[in-house]
Length: 263
Image (cartoon, rainbow, N blue to C red; front, side, top):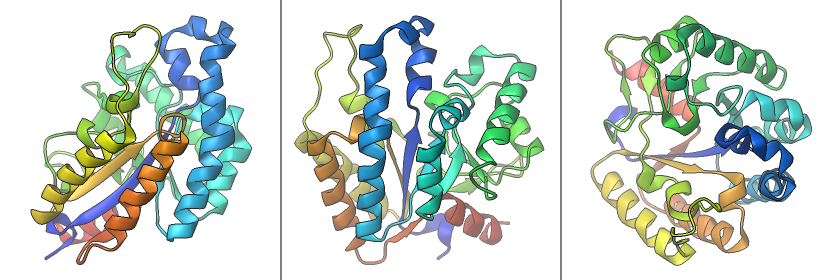
């Protein structure tokens, strides 16, 4: 049994910070209350996540917006110093489907330029909001990426048929944002409790692992970093670490194994 059909866990962190809110509405640049959520992610949640991963001795992959790396270079350096993988998450947090191919290429290249100041192993790409344009995969291949972690068409990793890229599939079920996301444009949306989300994650992850599949857990510092959610994450990861036969890897390490095994 290879990496493409074995029980796997990859823990990913989407480091969005201010770029998330500016992509939602450029006027948020004038709203310090809104942007305080980004500051919480950088100042409180990232150190807490690094501490958690260190204490549990777990790998993780942080996908970083280039614009946020410019604002918060010390935070990105702390991720690299912890020995954790850094991946590309756009330069801004604008979705590729809203751009021309030339604009998307510029977005990728600007992000590469900034993130390579912090790591020489920039292997993977995660789009803002897991959204693609018609040229995204070709652009990733052209720029030498090893893997994408964006699509929801499988629960096992695979190699793209028409592009020299590994895909590490994702799903909203295993993302913290759909369950916890809240802003003042959606007062009718209920914030779920950590207990409810823990049950959802355990149910879905257990079924995937029983089927020999990959769980790509996706969290965001400003969302998962609240104390009750961070405690829930610790409990989920502790249980996963104790599961027999489960391999926990960085996204880049898993993608490299898949590329080597699947021809």
